[in-house]
Amino acid sequence: MSLIDILFPGLSVVSASAQQVFAGNLDSYTRLLCTLGMVVLFTRYAIRYVWELVRSYFTSTIHVSYYDEAYDMLVDWIASQPFVHNAHSLIARVRSPQRTSIQNQGKKKPLTFSPWDGSFPFWYKGHLLILHCAVKDHREDIYISSIGLYPNILKELVEECRGKYLNNIDKKITVFEHREGDWKKTRLRPIRPISTVIMDKQVQDDLLKDVKDFLVEDTQKWYADRGIPYQRGYLLFGPPGTGKSSFSLSLAGEFELDIYTLQLSGISDSKLMKLFAELPPHCIVLLEDVDAAGMGRRDDTDTSQENKSSSVTLSGLLNVLDGVSSQEGRVLVMTTNHIEHLDEALIRPGRTDKKVHFKLADKKISTQLFHTVFKQTPDHKQAKEYFGEETIERLAKDFASKVPEQVFSPAEVLSFLLERKNSPVDAVTSVEDWVAKAKEAGSQLKREGSWVQESGC
Image (cartoon, rainbow, N blue to C red; front, side, top):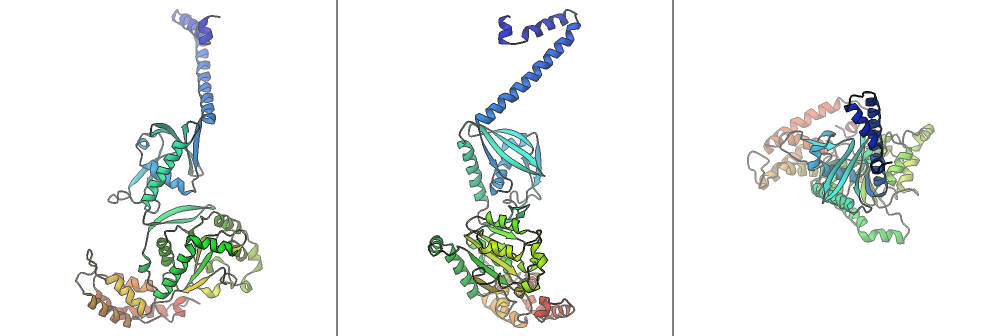
């Protein structure tokens, strides 16, 4: 055996076969092709084997779940990196302001491109990293690996993504919704000042003080020392359009809390328990329209319904609210249009600490709405003509005197005013015709138990 065969196994055979081919001996051509094929296969296997060894024992990896908010942090960062433009496999997305911060606001439906279904090397602070995107069930799982036994550089990357992400969502509320059994960030909402929510000022201040006291750092220890579950629950009830959901969003913005919204219809008890178990320590959980989830009073509920696995039962909801598996630290807000349809067990003290009635518009609310729409600001005049504060005050009182109390929701009154936002005088002069037409239209609605009939519209 020659030294060449020792250093490069098979090279002498390939060389001899090649010489015979060049000399015109075609019988050796087949043997040469077979030998080359074996070399290629062996080389590919060797490279794959060596890479698996390196990946298993000499690389660090950070995995990011699709349903975790860290996924959004990483995706936002990746979309802005230069290596994306050279990736061999991309997915195009229309950037939605509901998912991330708004970029290129002057461009209609701006596109972003992200790597998709493959491995993509890139450099970060002098280190070679590899982004892996694995597509599963029309979504992707992401993980990033680097050469080395310590994941410090990967942690630095994720921290940078986090910092940029937090900067983008500043002054915004992050809204999470139920997606396939997990919480998923769905949109960002600008923080709406709590002062813009039209409701009874005394009730609003009382609620804000109660939530603030609950979220103070020492409060949790106070609850723990006395063996009281560290939870707080509120029930907002009243007709549609009275500001229940708006107040919930403003409450989240006031205390810089994420808000987790959930519709109880179509969710089983086990899924509900899993979702509540995954809530962060401090957040707002918004259960909207709890009366529409099929959980009426116990006397009116079919016993067979309690055994259905496809929908939440009353016992299942009560268990996640204050049972042994209930999550502490969360602020629960439930909304309903019909408090009389709810079981007493759901709204008793301990589960619902405060009940707040959101009423239809009275004179005070109508006046506040008028001021909100027509107030003059230095940088933007809402009306075409300038009206002083005294004039706006007089017009507001005149407007409120023509709107019947406890008949229209604040949303209806606001909608009317927005249609005439350029002329407060027009709003005052046309409000009586609007009221008459609305009453006439309301009298034609024959829906049993509707809030329109109950309010006397």
